[in-house]
Image 1 (cartoon, rainbow, N blue to C red):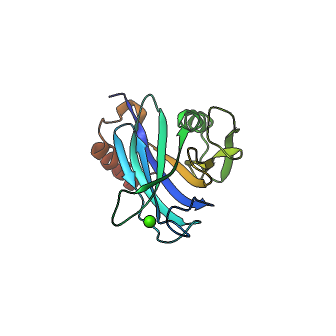
Image 2 (image 1 turned 60 degrees about the horizontal axis):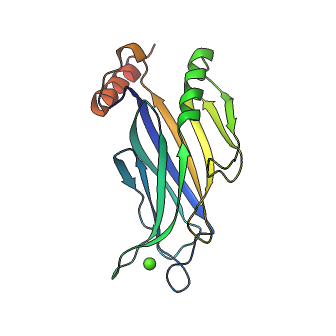
Length: 186
Ligand SMILES: [Ca+2]
C-alpha cells in the first residue's frame, strides 16, 4: 500500500433523472468504491431525484487513483437492478490540495482549479476545486453510463494529514493524529 495522503470524505449529494427500474420509479442507492474500500448510501424508496446527502469516508493513499460509483435499485425479492455507474479521477483534488498548501490558503473561499468535461471523465459540466476555510473541496456532477439516464452530484473533501513529514500510516492513527492536532491548534 502506498503512502497515506489523508482522508477522503465523499458526500453523495443527490441524483437527477435516474432510470426507472420498477413500474414507475426506482429505489436507488449508491455504492462508492476506492481501491478495496467500499461504502454505500441508504436506499431512498420510490424516487428518481433522490437526495441522500450522505458522507462516506475513505482513506486515500498514493497514487490517488479513481473513485468509482454504481447506482442500484433495491428490490426485495430479486437481485438489485443496475442503474448506471460513474467515476472521478482523484488526481486533480490531490494536486489542488498540494497547491493550497504551497499558497498557504487558509480562510475564505479560493478557487484552486477547474476540471473540464472530456472523454476521459464523467463530468456533466465544469467541476471546480476550491479551498473553503482551509478545506479542499471538489463539487462534481457526473453523468451515469451504461444506463438510459441519470446524473449524480458529489462533494469530495480531502482532509489532509496536517504534518506530512510525520504522517502515521493507517486510518485510525491518522484520525487520532487529526484529532490531536485539532485540539492543539494554535
Ligand atoms: Ca425496486
